[in-house]
Length: 181
Length: 181
Image (cartoon, rainbow over the protein chains, first blue to last red):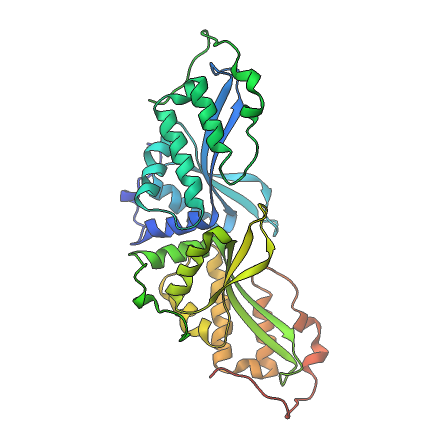
């Protein structure tokens, strides 16, 4: 949980059914993503990044702020591009450290999505549980995570799997290994 | 209400909070639209069309069917184009006759949308109430409706307002005048 954000319980603006509204809104506009990016600061040379994001025009800021209050974490930031109507775009994003696994994952495990986005969420949650167990710190775990990301909606070939020489590099013991647990 | 569709009350698949989920889903993916199209079959030469639609890939059919069950009307039809992943697209649509004004409008008046889409809904509802009162059958009413449509999200110049010669044509008494009430 993020200590600098108000918790859902304390927010006077919430109304009954807010949680199911959030499920529907994320079913409509949410994006669960896992990406693997090269990072020489990581022992295996790759960092696994995870994000739940919802992007809307700035005039819908209250809806994005409500998501932040319901999850008790995340941030609402201005996007670099505008929408078709030239209104600034805002992005609600949860991606820092352990936030998604302690907030987003249990939220949607208790309140299932109803569109095909459920499958993306299940893969997202599977990766986050693997990371919580430290699997991303082993080459076999990274490969497993890369294989899962290829089955998510974007359906792009994993750069990690295409660059297998990278994961055969010897571990660099002098670099910090980041893990959440 | 559409007699050929199951009502929400009879549907065993519904769960508590479905209505708020629907509000969130429409906040995310729904589109309220009013369009005015030339129609020589209408007395004033213009027909006012109204629609709530939600378009998703075919793998999310159950979510669209749930909307149909909740509203107790509408249809789920296959779209002519596919999405980026070449999956067929489905469109949940409510546009026939009096359905929107007796189902969609009260639904969202009781359960307000939380994004800027609320403003589109309010204009959509305003037009439907005007049509229920028969205002679209008078030239002044048509102009008023055309002005409202210009304030909706698509922000296109109304063809009706740009073609004012059309509404100055004398009424054709021999043609049927359609109205809901």
